[in-house]
Image (tube, rainbow, N blue to C red; front, side, top):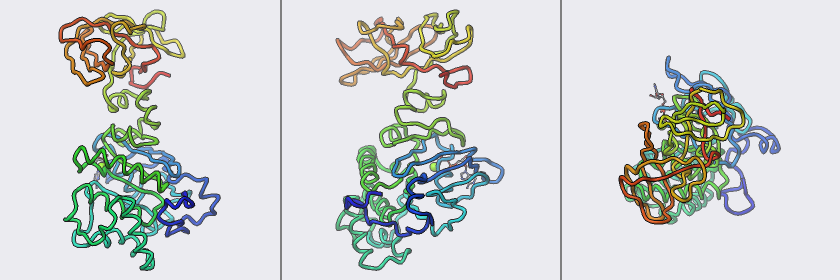
Length: 384
Ligand SMILES: Nc1ncnc2c1ncn2[C@@H]1O[C@H](COP(=O)(O)OP(=O)(O)O)[C@@H](O)[C@H]1O
Ligand SMILES: [Mg+2]
């Protein structure tokens, strides 16, 4: 952690000795590592074969639909749920060897979970008192944490005197005040209104960068994940679908699930033509695809194209398709069109406006670069 910049809350973690390893070994090991973990509730396996290595100081997001196992994984790090198989390492040390009360972990939940009858100071000071930090130091650290979350001087207020967003800031201050090894955030923004949510995205990211804390963030909101994360772990039904940077998972989804879950994706079903380099769509139009190896003639594939990857009208240079505008919405600099290209296929296109916005029923030419699409095989896996 950067402790020479005056940006951290204090130079050493309160439980500095918890990892029990030398400083050099600590620096090399991932902040958190999951090795093939399974987690079951009774007979129901909620998480299967989950492996992930999280670099120190990074911001990693678990993204997936409700029920896919995100909270379960967070709880396993904190020791709130037992793993049935595999290993979890924190700072290179098996968590089984670290009693729960010694795991140096900050938690922020969707519900702020502040103590309603304690004032802000006592709420934030909780983790420090628990760790027997001397009083003057507690006062100083609480003050600094409140400054970080931009609520300085709010020590005497009660949670009920604060807005939802402010309460969530206090919850964040409480989680970072003892400089935990890992900060776990479980859908911390979902109870906030849209404006506050966007503001808090930026705020959380800024605090994470400033403190250099390792953060694991959970959300089902793809925009949140794309805008905040160094890496995203896309999950489905207890298993990992893909791990990558926001751009990797958005631009080159590994599976049909990832393509579909991360924003709008056009999924064009087709059949590989004789040349092995082109795909005939259900609309009978033929398109060229970029693939490093020849595809088997006649095999069924899906061509995934993001709405922003299309060019329209005079700008079309490859894979020209003709269609008709089903609906158009003007967004300022660009427009979103739904376009019927025949064969019961509608495409969603997000194109910059060069001339006027096309109207419903008008003919339209569109195209996309062969490099701008991803090919999935019959099982929905990317063909690389
Ligand atoms: N205490 C529990 N007992 C039994 N099943 C549970 C328990 N907690 C979660 N589950 C189940 O485990 C799965 C994963 O839950 P969870 O980790 O909360 O998902 P997420 O946070 O992604 O919405 C879900 O099917 C959920 O119903
Ligand atoms: Mg959850």
